[in-house]
Image (cartoon, rainbow, N blue to C red; front, side, top):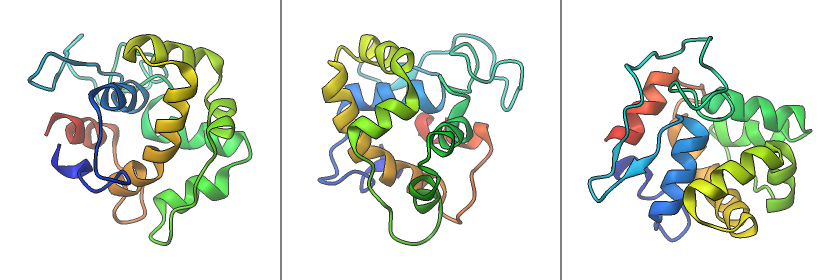
Length: 153
């Protein structure tokens, strides 16, 4: 997967975890062996009318920016900022991540991946700090189409 090779401790991103990250950050599912995202419609990068839905490129929460906003709204802004910033990434415990994302989002991603919710939260809480850090190398949140292209490479 290139960009994400060293983002997760142990360097191993399983296909279910990539599906979860894709659903959360870009609203795309991985299918088949080719790791090519499905194309539900013509890309509409940063289209505010599709943010927060799975139909556009915005992911379940409106993409990376929406994920960070959810974490900040739930009182985990310092943790989210550490992932984006250039310093040490702070960890988030699975329960806090689940509370921040909300039960509907967790249930949706668990169904898409075939993972149980606890396992999903455990893996996401381990993976997200490194993934967000890799997606924000200069300490700034990229445009949504740039996040989506990271999942296409």
